[in-house]
Amino acid sequence: MHTTQIAALTRLLEQGRDNALLRFGLGQALLADGQGAAAVEHLRAAIAHDPRYSAAYKLLGKALAGQGERDAARRTFQQGIDVAEARGDVQAAREMKVFLKRLDKAAG
Image (tube, rainbow, N blue to C red; front, side, top):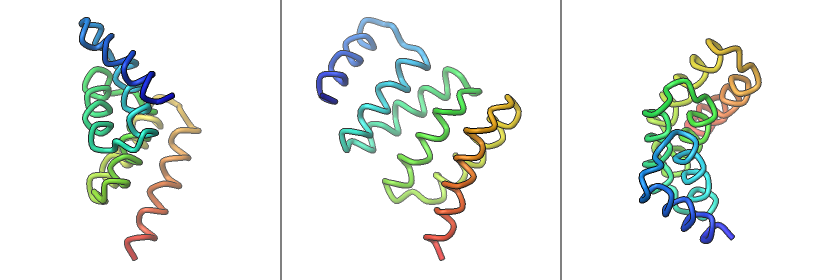
């Protein structure tokens, strides 16, 4: 399933339909497919397109943590919390705070 979705989204990207939502969807599908490094690339691109896209920060932080990049994940979650709070996106901020606590707890 993810492979079909990845292929379809990649085709849209190749056709020049590059935007935050497309990059987020592609990153999400790649992460679900176990392709964390590729997901990171697209999620960073989503944030570059829309620096206020709090869901992209949340997923990027998870992808970075999954790649063992704890410091980058920590910075991403903190940025995402700041963005979400500034936008009034309480749920996303709350979720990223939980992920940040788990990351800190795992680091010892």
